[in-house]
Amino acid sequence: MIIRARAVVTMDGAPIENGAVAISGDRIVGVGKFPEVSAQHSGQEMIDLGEQALMPGLINTHCHLDYTCLRDKIPRQKSFTDWIRAINVEKSKLSPEDYIASINEGFAEAKRFGTTTIANLTAFPELIRQVPDASLRTWWFAELIDVRSPDRANELVDSAVESLKFAPNYGLAPHALFTASKNLYQRCEEAGANVLLTTHLAESREEMEMFRDASGPLYEFMKSIGRDMTDSGHGTPLERFLTVRDSTTLKAFKARRDYDWLVVHLNELTESDFELLEKMKTKFHVVHSPRSHEYFGHSRFPFKRLHALGFSVCLGTDSLASNESLSLFEEMRAFRRNEPDVPPKKIFEMVTVNSALALRQRKTLGRIRPRFRADLIAIPCAEGGDRFAEIVAFDGQIHWMMVNGKTLEPASACE
Ligand SMILES: [Zn+2]
Image (cartoon, rainbow, N blue to C red; front, side, top):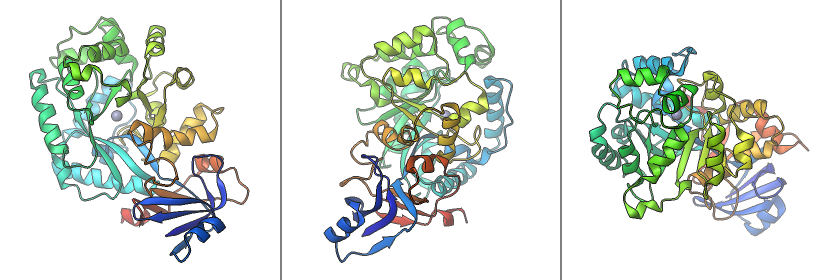
């Protein structure tokens, strides 16, 4: 099959005007100017997308589809700890059926906004067998919390892996340092070299206060629910994370690479944290959610400093309990508002190339290149336009997409 478009944004060099992509099965087999691609693959079915820009499908590296049904349910709170209380109240009203409906609704919405790959954290890995095939490429991360039962860390990890292992791609997500024990983090690291890991880190000022100063609303709240607070008052969340990781006991996993981790947030960092980050030989991936960040009013995301230290930054939507939609186009625009001098191409890399790297798919996703998976989307474009600026400015829904070589109807998913 050949797909022709006004422009093909490959992420390798400049966009190709009057371009085409040849697909065979689930893979891309050719890309270039239309006359050349059609000569090389003559006699094949052709789809002409006309005045559209064809590009790699978007990759959302952080979301919680469990909470799609909580859109507009939680107004902005004065403190992060109040938000945790509020979401706990909402969660207590939901049944397993509500969560399954929420996940399905989330997949449908992500699709409408051109997302073809999604890294989704679920607090209910046992439910995912009941989620019908979403047709999006999904990494299922089991979100693990053992704050009320720290002696059950081993059991939690084993049962999560048992539930997830039939999924083509999966990982583990110890929720955050304030809700997951050191033992739980270590068990996740020891779960196997192929298991990707993600966690929320240094998200709020209250998390900083809890770990560094052993005080503040989050400290008081966690103490009130019976958490062992002896790890507080000894350093920043980042320091604590690196200490927990350093104490991984099994020798085989000592060598586990830092870049196996997708570290979400990293909003609150001290000067000593930046020194630690600079010393890290291999860097983990950082996931930033610009609109969820705005909703909480965290300190400014230190993009420039992290970038200068060699960290690869990806974008994610987080959940609809702190965001308005699952559109990565909206996230790119929100990022651009905060960092107007970062070129649009660099911003687009944060939902394509960088995200593929974080999911260890550097050679299969995030670009239009022969042998890569045929995950593609298209948006309207103008003759002679700046393609990356058009992408970041795109404010709408997608009308054509392909995942794994199959065209999907993105709009019909919401019916
Ligand atoms: Zn999150």
